[in-house]
Image (cartoon, rainbow, N blue to C red):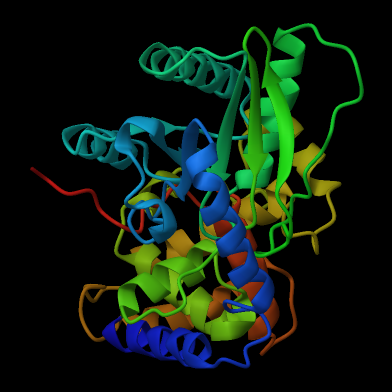
Length: 357
């Protein structure tokens, strides 16, 4: 495990130090940093969007010194993080006198709750300063924390709640980091009018911590090509092997086996019609979970020692079969596995355990 961390850290730091990098702190990212810094004094509230799986590694250093009474930390992608750990992180930020809210940008009810929370924050800010009819919020954060998805959801839910007519705007949303290139405004409430600014993701110019490099790479804040998908997939499997997530799959049935109980026959028929080469289909996800559970459960040596690479190698072999791939196509296995992890199909993982105080 330590060897994987060093390898990933070295790969990321090498790119970060290279001024000729095609995307790490490129001229457009440097320009975005300046544009955001210029607008910070003009906005009423800053919404710092972090990844709930890595609440510390995804901190945006640009707003660290921003007035805490006007700053809210949004732990986005809470649906991908361990729920108990997220609650601990919320308590941690509360002790630090920092306002925080855990959010899933794809959950309509959760966005409504966030909108109510933000409107209360706006009223609080308005009481302290000269009341005004137009309030601006700014979404800031590192790459791929889901700022644009949040902007779209707040805009959609806010416009519906205010029963406003007109064409909805849409920010570009992508699974790849660094797709947002400009600052865009979206109206999210009326009386007073509240606008949220979606901004490009910005990474720090330099990184020197291997663990942080690993967290950013595995969460998707850094392009997979920087580290390599196979190395990232091995790192994820190592994390999963040392967690208890796989134990939840102990009672899964092998739906490809003809000898199954009658109560799942109907489900088996439905799943059997799914395309086996599509790794997002329930049948394939079920087989992947079964393969991983079988590998870990049958591994007689503790996964906390030097035999962990041996287990990971065995898992790759089983995943070739689960994904219906020819032998040695490890790169395809890695791509599919990372996609399932990042969409929550293989469980919820918080990569940074909360501080216990």
